Image (cartoon, rainbow, N blue to C red; front, top):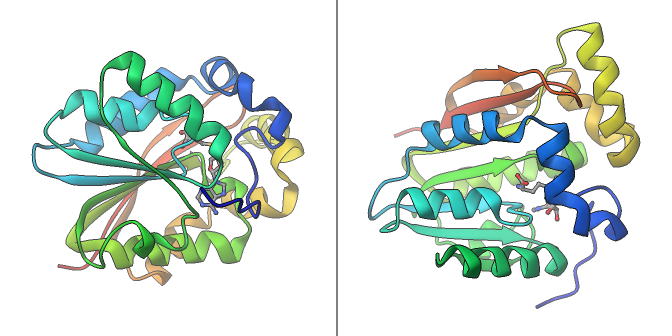
Length: 220
Ligand SMILES: C[S@@+](CC[C@H](N)C(=O)[O-])C[C@H]1O[C@@H](n2cnc3c(N)ncnc32)[C@H](O)[C@@H]1O
């Protein structure tokens, strides 16, 4: 594994990583948005699906449980979360292809135009704007024509209450990285990266701000 440190860790600081799963369950109404994401991802037998910034592996494991005959790749730059993810997959009795790497270099883990679906949850809000752009562009590159991108993340914070609650995330992950998400920039960035049929399909208010699910397609 390489030792790339150019990323924000799962909970903003490395020493908090061991608490990640508990905090996400408590502070994001996790079950609601993850199940919605799984339904929209609709993983199928024979598909190859990449989870960018898979963290502790919760969603990659859900994908593989739902579709045991799919190939699921879980990618993250942080070896500490990947260790947790591997242990969880082993306990769940599922095989996920775990890889260490950054989301803006996806051809390191998949051939161009080869993937059926790319998913990513709670990653883009903690990336600087140029990195959000390069992750989306890299996702388009590895998706096959007609392939689907699904992003679940803190998106446009529509109300004063949601903007206030989202400040907790901003304090951990940095105002400069998180504010573009709160201003609703993601659909525009997806279009700029070459995606079509871009839509915000669900919005879940949570104790830390609203989490949106966006769907987009690589042109067929
Ligand atoms: C808040 S966690 C989300 C983890 C997981 N996707 C989930 O839904 O629980 C964000 C993850 O993104 C990863 N990350 C940060 N910058 C990244 C980048 N440039 N490319 C890929 N992953 C990145 C972090 O290591 C961390 O595991």
